[in-house]
Length: 345
Length: 183
Image (cartoon, rainbow over all chains, first blue to last red; front, side, top):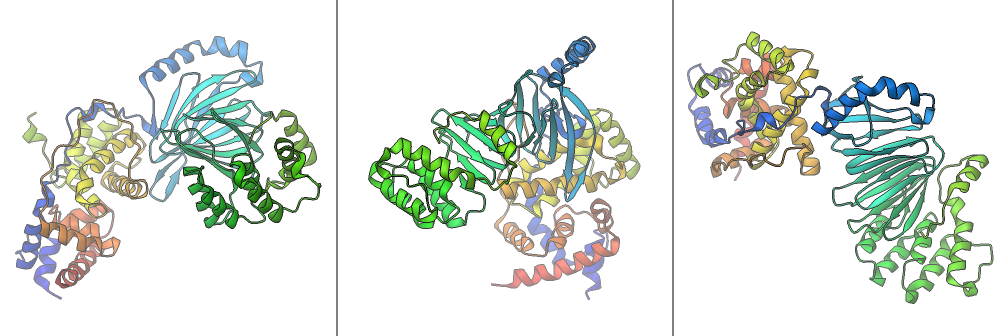
């Protein structure tokens, strides 16, 4: 052990060691990296504890709502569906630690909730459910009412758990509208509208300017920045199929990319192939049908001569029960069925 | 107060001063936070240099202090301010690697990062060698060799024992020399 460099290493005031002094000299230019406060920096971040960021408009609105809260509450609390939404900070991440911090605040229409890269917040949606707003997100409360609650996810990710009747809870992104049909799901959106929807329980209807897609439990669908929903696929799909779907969604007119999906499809891929049937050009539709018949044996005697649209509907009716990974009781499936619209897929 | 009087290093700001500054900052005193910023900016730079490229350090340091200012009221132990700040800096660096950017809402009129002097080629070569060392050795080494912090100051700031710092510095220098001698 070199005592001289050890002493100087630990104590810069000790007699210097030439080799370490040389290293310090070589590294001196790194000390020139300016990390000082920038002009106006102190005004950039309002030091709100708990990690939430509020716009000035929101702070004014919340203050006004609190002042008028007693009168409002007396008339509206009688209806459970009109109970105000509350924001409760779920946790704040520090390294590997999650420190739960409880501070509930009430939010209303027009309020904006922004989470930084360390903070997760939970939004209790009246009495119909709750939404976890994940780090790096921006969410707006758009509407609340007796029969509907609407959020806007401008950017970031939310995880929603809703136990209201279907179509009570809606989340809009820059390119799509997710309509809850009684479920648990994760929705992510970048500022350009690209993102994904992953459904864990129940079903979500995803509407864009181009089409409407119903996504059952256990499935994922991507949304591109042009607002086109992708092909729903099982979350358990292998990487080659996911890659093939991703390539197709980037260039849907390329029939070779369609064939790549067909090559990688397996017995769990009927949801992918059914949605593909309704999108591909006629020249390759037969191949998609053949592959669908191979992976999901159809026993209903559906004739290819029955007309494309009718065949699609009949195919869907036959295949759809197998698309969800959830085994909901019969009454639940009947209840959800009542609320479904006509989705083009 | 003049700008010179405000330029203090963490070593010059004593423990009781940090305690008092944190308490004032937690009650909304931005000047107190500004003093904490200046006293710890070298420390944050040293921590970030252990994880990211020098080009990314200015913006990530800025993000670190911004996050610290927003969350300082949640710091329960003012004496652990430096350790807390260091862990924010590491999280910022990790998130930078994961996503390439940090979501920190800023007003539109925020000035861009100032032009930075270019580190020397040799400094970059040494830094690259440091990045190849075990992670637990990088911060003590850079805090000592770049920021000139003593072993005692490093121990206090990182929340580790003097002995652990000695071992890290000794082992770090030894491995660094081996790395630098490779062609």
